[in-house]
Length: 122
Image 1 (cartoon, rainbow, N blue to C red):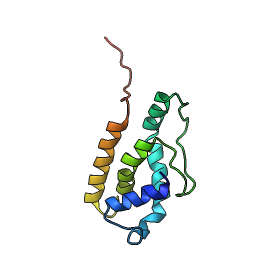
Image 2 (image 1 turned 90 degrees about the horizontal axis):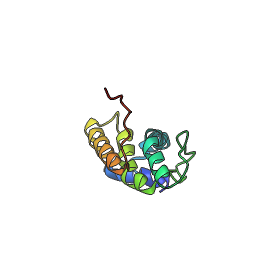
Image 3 (image 1 turned 120 degrees about the horizontal axis):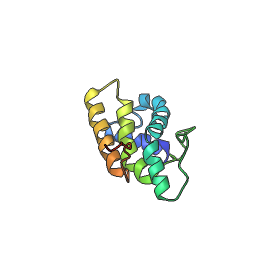
Image 4 (image 1 turned 30 degrees about the vertical axis):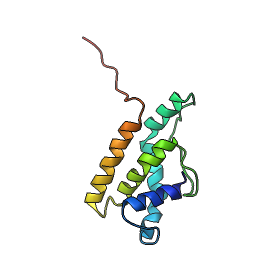
């Protein structure tokens, strides 16, 4: 999925169109890069599961026309909600809360394992 397609999916969740939501486009690339950084643990878990080398730093997109460098399920099922939340964070708290909660829930279902710290047993 390209950044543009993810942006359009996020606009759809916000009941906007590319024409009515043109204001948000200036923030979309930065927000997708933020989602990539925030999802590095999940991206690397999927890469490790698939036998690929984990990233040492989050992947980064230069333009919205680029393919989002992450697992297709993560990008299609989680990122539109995360992007929608980030786009309306300052404008609409209700939509932000809904989209952020949906993103978090979907992200938890996506990750193949939850990592926890090792604790000493006494």
